[in-house]
Length: 379
Ligand SMILES: Cc1cc2nc3c(=O)[nH]c(=O)nc-3n(C[C@H](O)[C@H](O)[C@H](O)COP(=O)(O)OP(=O)(O)OC[C@H]3O[C@@H](n4cnc5c(N)ncnc54)[C@H](O)[C@@H]3O)c2cc1C
Image 1: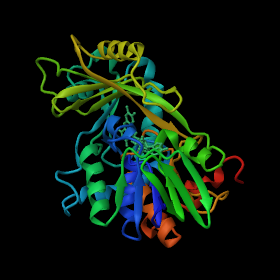
Image 2 (image 1 turned 135 degrees about the horizontal axis):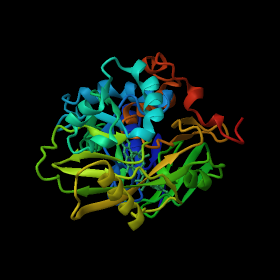
Image 3 (image 1 turned 30 degrees about the vertical axis):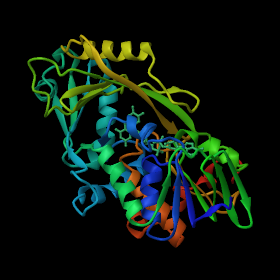
């Protein structure tokens, strides 16, 4: 059977691939190839759903900022509900973590004038279950938001289809070859060919590059565990901010009337359908019990997901200098939801116009900052 042709193939229909495909479909014929039956099955469906413009390095923060206006403007027929809703983040410090809190304050306070330093009593007033003796001081970031991941992901997939794009699920790419000026992708659903391929394969991005004969960019998938427990009795948790200790050894936040808890683990693993480990669940609960007066009688749900980082923790978007038409969109780490719109616009800008959109460039983002030329073997 002849290969199905397109202008651009996108490998992976998680948040990165879906957002990029929606933007790219405004410029040409785009086919998305997704291994799973459900596009959000891996990292995208397993996140903690927080949006904050103070998280990550300076480039990550700029890409998050670059995404905000689009998320705020959800009403343009893109989504069914608001994408962002108020949550806030409370970074609290037990006595031994005061140096980390001071460092966080020095870094965060210039970024947003609404960020406040709180004493222990004011912090505990925001999250009354915190043990007062474990909260010497805190930083409150009122502008941190919950981000509705499913709503956003589905919005991108709908926009993609509306613009004429094709999504093939159950379509793992098993071979990738360059022939006659096009990439030929082999899948169980048949062959697909296009001059440009976007590698948005999440934790598998290095594996997809290997299919194309390219060296890795050094992506390291790191497992993070999350669980859901019942809301603690006697508290109205709805307005609680996300509460995280200054050394980031665990956090908890309200999630659909219950509490999401994580030990903020970062265990390097091979890319896989990652599952939670009993020890990490136990650590998460232990840290929650140490920090708060909450009791946990039952874990209602548990999962783990992969946060995939390159060495400098800056996400990667750009053509590989080693291969014509091979575009990387990878390494989103723990920020791939909040930065998705900005990264997708950079991707569409570089592929369709040969340049980063002007408003994002004005934030100090260049093709070099994000591009894969910074990795070994490509300089
Ligand atoms: C516990 C946890 C909490 C997090 N919290 C947040 C948060 O609060 N805020 C935030 O912004 N981010 C958060 N993240 C990070 C965020 O979830 C990721 O950065 C984001 O989902 C990455 O999206 P992606 O599309 O790159 O990856 P994925 O969603 O994993 O998508 C990649 C897709 O590629 C497909 N694929 C792989 N190989 C192939 C192949 N050969 N052929 C076809 N398809 C292929 C996979 O099946 C997969 O669907 C969190 C992550 C975890 C695990």
